[in-house]
Length: 100
Image: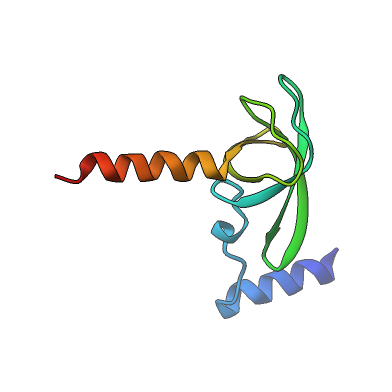
């Protein structure tokens, strides 16, 4: 334990420490690896900090495997996600409505 602590301490002192923002899940783009059913929990996979990871996920609507999603919230070990295409469509509609 002391060796690991010393390594992390040295990283912090050198300024090369870990940036917590690099490990925030909100805003991360992922892919559904296990379908998300209505009222249930599925799973998403994502890459962060050069490592491939997975986390349980929920959504307001069912989402099939292979769909790209964005993490909106992360609480109690479960990510709340939404389809990337839905968010992109909303963003495009907002841009069109703001054009004079």
